[in-house]
Amino acid sequence: MKKETILKRAIEKAIKKGYNPCEFGNEVVDVRDSFVWIGNKKGESCGMYIDSVLFSHDFCKALFGIQPVCSGCGEKYISQGAGKCMCSYELIPVPAWIYNGWRLFESNDRLEYISKFLKEDN
Image (tube, rainbow, N blue to C red; front, side, top):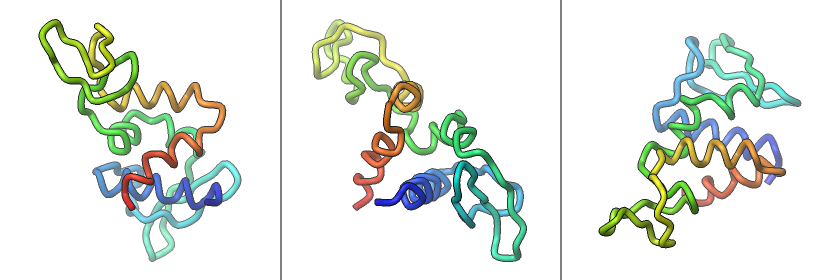
């Protein structure tokens, strides 16, 4: 999948889940170089740096969700007795958007990381 397609699908998914980045509308108009334009069919749009979208709290909350995950492995946190998750770490659960937002930031290939979350839609 091309870079522009991954970014467009990720932003569209986040918009469907409540991300509202632009006062003019919620349609991804164009993705080019390091910019994304979001707006409406009348030609009104907001231009934003892609990184400012990818690392915004609102985008991460919408794309990755707010459910608790294990801070060690990122899997769904299941409180079992002493608060262990499926991987048996005894770590504090964190919201999925924080865990995955940090992993996205650390990732060498951010688009590959995001594309994992787009495959769930198929």
